[in-house]
Image 1: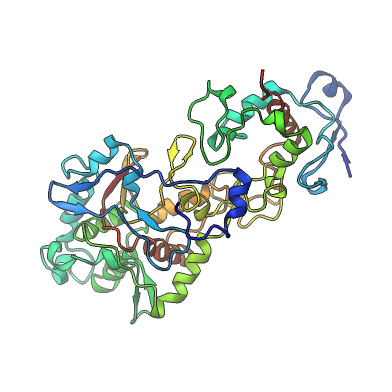
Image 2: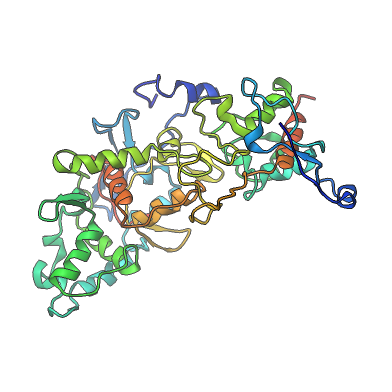
Length: 158
Length: 284
């Protein structure tokens, strides 16, 4: 099910981040871990995905994953597998599902769910150590998930 | 291979397609050229998933390691000196100092104490951390104000007491009346807290030796606490570190001195039974 978010049409025209439709975390349908339908109507932007992957305040994906294409950012981690060529062997739907909630693909994985807002034990308000607000936002927005998926799809040989 | 049983975590490994292997170095720690520190030991029987335990010292750079090998280089020893001054300072309305009851030289009265804390206290009917016992002395024996649980004065006094056990094996009791608290601490250790859904075990049992960004993950042993961190240039109390770790899982933390952190401290301390006390240690 999709939730329609109304926004002024003028804003939609000038901002690519603005989206007409967004699937909320509670309404996602996983199919064996994958999410077939994009979370927004706006296509993912691989350039923004690249920034999200290396930004500590956003995805910080390289904290755990080594990515050769992101070596301009220092200190890649080793907790998860390297992501080189992941666009070769994973579909967009699979990548979307893993970034949104990897536990739907890999039971018990250490990887956090980046598009999930409920079901946590003592959720906090970001990194303040204080209790989370009632309307806890996901770590990444729907559009940011799509941006990361778009970047991951570029990780191919040649 | 560090895991005794592959079955419980087989799924996690399958998820990443890669197993984690210990990545502690082979260096040996001798402090001041005389006190040998055991930084590697067989895991205590109660640990189900790890065969060998390592002090966090073994995961640090050689530059950082060197700072702990000589007390003149160890910035944590400044706090020990400050606490030594307070040891003999009369405070409170009972006109007493630490020395009034425990003597002028803590090396005599406090040897071995740090190695067995947290510890069940029969009279109080509770597990007590060293910090709780220090404050019990201050309030009830000295009639003085308690120290803040993770305050600089508390942490320094813990360091003074701990250094008298340096080189002795950690040996906290987990049976008898302490068992219930220990079980609670174990449950907390394996609970995946916060929006990142991370447990202590996710990083410090399943992934020690691996890097998270620039951080080289250790086993999260606490035999070296209080710990001087180069990152914040002060001596750090163990429950302040617990708080920081849980905060970093995007969770609502527990408070230092809370029943949860007392239980966690007992449990984590027991995972280091057999390693030498090496406080105050020096870390990143």
